[in-house]
Image 1 (cartoon, rainbow, N blue to C red):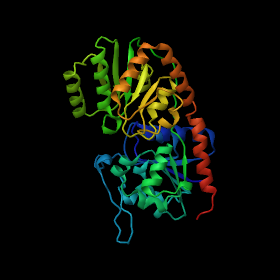
Image 2: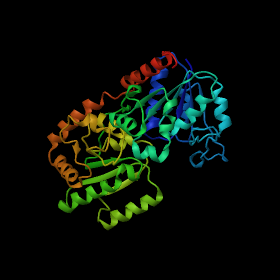
Image 3: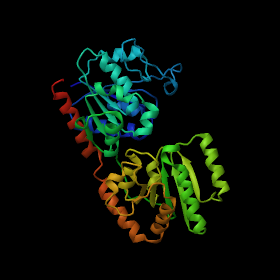
Image 4: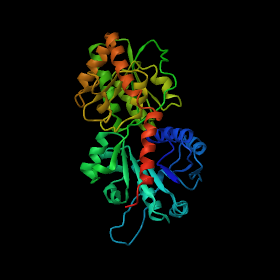
Amino acid sequence: MKILFINHSAAKTGAPIVLLHFLKWLKQNKDLSFDVLSLQNGSLLEAFSEVSEKHYYKLKKDFVLNKIDRYIKSKQKGSVKGRLLYPQNALKSIAKNNYDLIYANSIISIPAAHFIKKNSGTKAKLLVHIHELNLTINQYCSELNAYEPSIDFTIAVSNKVKQNLITNWGFNDNKIKIVYAHSKVDDLNKKVDKQFIVGGSGVVGWRKGPDFFVLVAQYVFNKFPDLPIKFQWVGKISKLNQFIYNQDIERLGLRDKLKFVGAKDNPHDYFSNFDIFLMTSKEDPFPLVCVEVGMMGKPIICFKDATGTQEVLMPVENAVIPYLDIAKMSEMVVQYFNDKDLRHNDGMKIKQIFLEFTPEKQGAKLYKIIKGLIDAPFN
């Protein structure tokens, strides 16, 4: 069984982290070797090299992975064009390994996976693991429906992702399996900051809704200016966005009450100090941060119909509020601050939900799909 896992990025973000957890589980629990192709650079390159038999990546100064767009050019009618993010000659060389299965992690990996499959000497199966919803797909792989015929099976990270693929991209219901994201949290109870902290997290951009995080803080402190709490957002932020949000914070009088602390090598240390977590995302398939803060027993508040996480949070009465209802989210922040028992009880409910999403449990599901697809006759 020869498998190539294609990693769209080795950055320390959700999809690569999920893949790395799975590959570590796979290496420890199955007598199986596999190769990894990382299309873009990142801090996890060494970790992917350690876990794989071969790790293909490019680090030469004249090859800037996050800025290059290489298109498949073909005069054939109906040919697919897409961003490869890797030299064609290198992909053709990789294809000569004649893999039994090519596993494309995220939609950004699909063009390269399709290219390798097309240039392989064997009838390689193509399995795609889709972590994205509609706006992100349109942004990064708008030709996805053209790749669908060459995809043998699809893993979706939530039912919301699955339904979007069926409704908007022509995917076959019978060829999609839902496997929720998974993670690991080493120390589940490590809060050391005695102050009440309202947490947020993610790369600061439109999808994660950091602007709503600011508006919730404004709403809370307009009504309760002396409330002894602080808002803290952990995640990568550009210099421009840092300037913009710092200016908003100053104008709103929130200098000592709200802070974007940037990306951290040890985000779990920050998450453990959160008392509650606001997922202000407008579109989020099944964010890894919710798995991690959920495992720590932190109450989560998210917007209805904005995220696949809603699917597992429904048993918790206070977790899902109307879409973009800043007033309701702010009221829940104050309620959790005032009611320690409610905070504890909801946190324990959420902890029980997310303790299911471990590499051991979810990894077994992924392996079953891989094994079944390789063993199935080629259509």
